[in-house]
Structures are given as structure tokens and as C-alpha cells.
Amino acid sequence: MNCCDADNSVGATASKPDEAVCTASEVPETDRCRSCNGQGRPVSRKTVLLMLKPELLERAMHGNYNFCAARDCSIVYFEDKGREHFSVDDLRIRVGLKVTDDPIPLCYCFGFDESHIRNETSKTGETTIPERISRLIREGLCACESRNPAGVCCLGEVNKTANRLSETSQLR
Image (cartoon, rainbow, N blue to C red):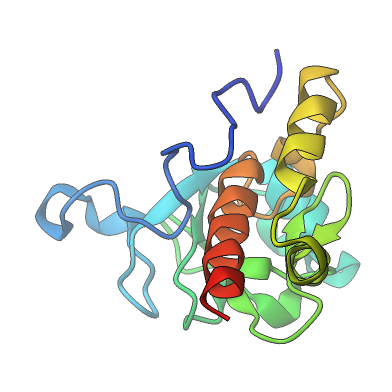
């Protein structure tokens, strides 16, 4: 099974990591970040453990975790029925949804960040990066569930960023 089995074309309307799926009244309190009250998305304990600094691993050995995609919130993971949480400083890698300075990671499997798309778009007016990633995904070479801190396919965020940067480039 491929973690990225979806229509991953540029402009595809996939669920975006920073968009809420339910209204606040429909989301159980345990699915909400205690810091920003944003909706969390379930993430496997394996993903959490792969992202944490070694000295924090024991703290995440139990419980179920959610990923907080709110850009302005420093919390990345929070336990749904406990008090345990982990911030951007607790992770071994940068979380693209949580940073505003380069490098802003987008594709954790193949190493693309926002500057790659920005540079290609500024030179050619477009980017081939989403298509290149899609081809690699079709070949079964992605590991988003393990390598992306959100535990989901990166391509939605890559497409969103490519579209935004393409529009910005065309306005110049």
C-alpha cells in the first residue's frame, strides 16, 4: 500500500494539513491542541517516535497522539487523553508548517523545500517538482507516513506551495 495513493496533480483539491475538517462543536475536546485549540489530526506513535530527539523517546511510549498543523502554534504533537505534548524544539527536524525562514521543508521523502520551488519558478515561471514527486510516488518510493512529521503524504502541501509561488511569480 502506498501512503500517497491519491490524485496528486498540481491544483488537486486534496485535504490540506492546515485546514480543519470539522467545526469546533464536532471535534471532541481530546482532538484539540491545548495550546491553540486547533484541531489535531491523528498521527501514529511510530511517526512521533521517529521525529523526537532521542532523550524524549521514553515520554512518548504510551498514548495516542495528534499533530497540530496550526502555523503559529509551537506544539507539534499532543496526547489525546493525557497531558503529554511536544513542541518544535523537541523534534530532530524542522516542521515546514511551523517555520517561516528557509529552509522550509515541503517533501520529507525526497528533500524538496520551498526554496527549490521558488528558485525554479523564478527562473522558468513554473515548477516541475510536484510532477517529479508524483512520479517517484507512483514508483512506490515515498515514506511519508514515517518521514513527514504530519504522518501524511507531503504532496498536498507541495502542490499548495507550488500554486502560491506560481501565482506570485506571475504577478511580477
